[in-house]
Length: 98
Image 1 (cartoon, rainbow, N blue to C red):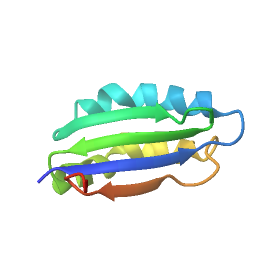
Image 2: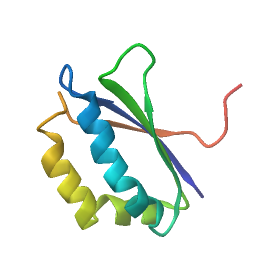
Image 3: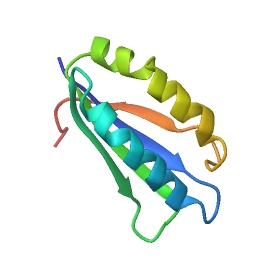
């Protein structure tokens, strides 16, 4: 069963461009990972320092491998320099409610 995530990210004021640059470096690596179906960064309209990452994985095992990968550990280690708080990860239901 697939795993759908929405990851909420807020950067320090004026540092949204650093989030975009960091994500751009990760995109080709993550999208090439086994089980990655979707990995997209969206900026919240009117909020240059708020973002949502939409992810879709083939399985929880694929997501776990992604989360424990060296490139994600490196990304997490540097994110504190521009993020105002840790990312909030929300697992979403598979089917729309309405």
